[in-house]
Amino acid sequence: MNLLSFYIPEWFWVAFNLLVLIVVLRRILWKRVGKVLDERQEIVVKTDQDSEEAARLRTEMEQLRTLLDMEMDVKTAEMMQEARTRAGYEYDRIVAEAETKAGLIVSAAKTKAMQERDAVLADMRRQVASTAVEAAGILLRANIDDERNKRILEDFLTEREVSA
Image 1 (cartoon, rainbow, N blue to C red):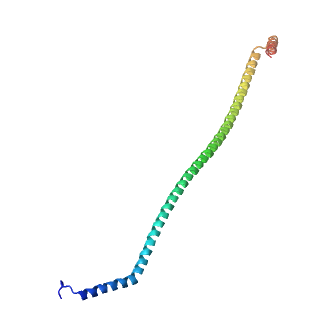
Image 2 (image 1 turned 90 degrees about the vertical axis):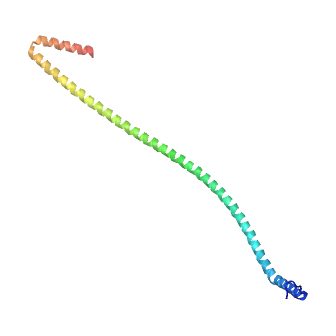
Image 3 (image 1 turned 180 degrees about the vertical axis):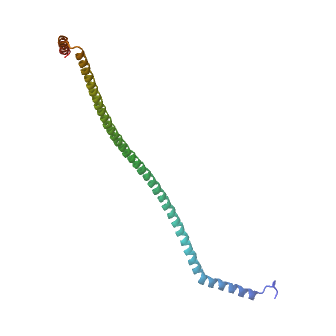
């Protein structure tokens, strides 16, 4: 058989077999393929919807995160201010306590200095009095003149009355 020759009955059977094959495939496979295509289309649509929902949720999460960050910043600032306030009160308390202790130390030192000064003055007075008594004794022994001693004593008493 020649390839260029045209034999009608053979072409008729080829066309008929082709039509039968198309009808059979359409009846058997077309519904299943259409069903698979529809399912895939639904999956694609659902995936698109899920991705849009995920994008929306991501945006909401970012907004919530931003709000939480802002709230944390505010709370952190409040806590820092509260800590500074408490530190200031503690500082004031410590300084007041130190000033009180310093005042007590200064007061005790002044009191001790006054006591030491009074003791030194009292000792000096005793020494001056002792020296004066010794000098008076020496003078009295050297001048045993009763008349003169009476006159010195009277002058001394007169001077004491005038100065008092």
